[in-house]
Image: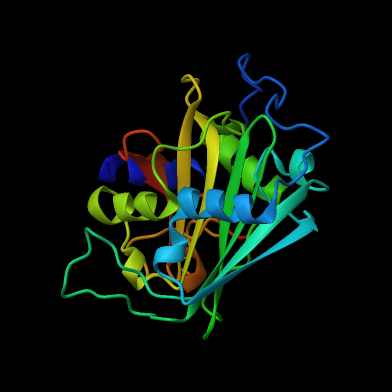
Length: 261
């Protein structure tokens, strides 16, 4: 897994651009008439998909039109859809696999924002708002910048899954703790998205993309903008993206791609 991680870091800096693979089909599970269900039912569904209600002090749900989404390969199809956004406030991680000696470094400082709708597919995305210093965090990459970097690794998000995940978001985070790279308890932000993902031409599979931001800097990272530069900015070292099989909880691979714009 470590060699896979190192390989992913190195290959993202080459300028090879892969052609759109033959399996890349239109986003069949994204429809133009997505409408939210009853708010009480939507809240129950969000609890089941994320389990964030188990670690938050409070939650509230709002209906809105999605704008500014930066999901690689899918953002144009997602923006403009009516969605539910559920805010889980003052969260403290309680991971089953966490070591007692490494508790949550930032209790009550994370607010998780879960965005979801259901219309022939299962769209669920979780972003974090951190109540503290975020000056060490790089700007989130735009959809296009992320797409360009993922293409260089021959990785694609092909669609929104048609069925809900067997693992909740919180279980996927625990899978990172137990078998992935990076420690969620040390991350300022923990972002997640449920997508169909493929790499190296393999058959697309449902995965949780779990990104830890604001973790202790990764040693030996390369500055993607200046590969020969010895001094690497912290913002290029303190995040990691784990790809978790949404059925088994296995970490398929981990990488620090995409980087900020």
